[in-house]
Image (cartoon, rainbow, N blue to C red; front, top):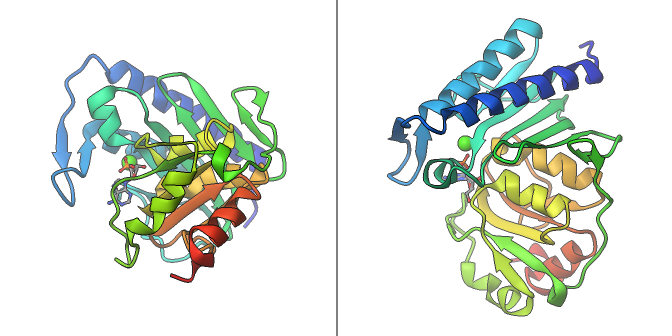
Length: 267
Ligand code: 2AM
Ligand code: CA
């Protein structure tokens, strides 16, 4: 399939900014909140409307591109051939509803399975994190420096306390020694935000047992582009067609944690 990365990137940036502007203007209004799989799995009309906005724009401009979106308005994606946009219209919906902050729009654009463009928009702060593979990662117009190794005992790690793994085999007690040894732990409640925090060095690693492809598609492109590592908690490659556990980190630290705290993935 013929494609022009720069052209796709330009459209994507314009659309994500416009969608963010629309979300900001929704703040004074009353949200219509409903639940999905369980009483804590929330969705609003803004999540749905934002995803529909992207689909309309993408299909109108790039009719051959396919879309995998959290709210299910996109295509039924069972393979990653061609150009696939992986979209979370609001990552951190619970934060969006309760806090009106700590959420982001996340778009990862994959071409024949390879992550080529990553966009994460921190709507409240008007901060767009973006990258094209091979061209570096930027926060608005400023280049983000490459990631450097850090020591476990000087690291802040983000963790998600909802320890329900897709394969049910993750024992949260495995992580107790790591939590004791690091300098501090955080939990922000938006995987996309947690990944840009790793990308910018505000935290050193992020570990979580269960995420969907749209939560991680953009962030892992950025972290890898900066020299960081993005795998599951066993150190294996991530699969954009399934749920994964996630372990993103600075280089060096990733290997140290895997070897010394995650038993080289052999648990
Ligand atoms: P969401 O807000 O788009 O649902 C919360 O720590 C993070 O995990 C958010 O990125 C959230 O994305 C995601 N999340 C929440 N529940 C999830 C689930 N059941 N499966 C996968 N990801 C989930
Ligand atoms: Ca979402």
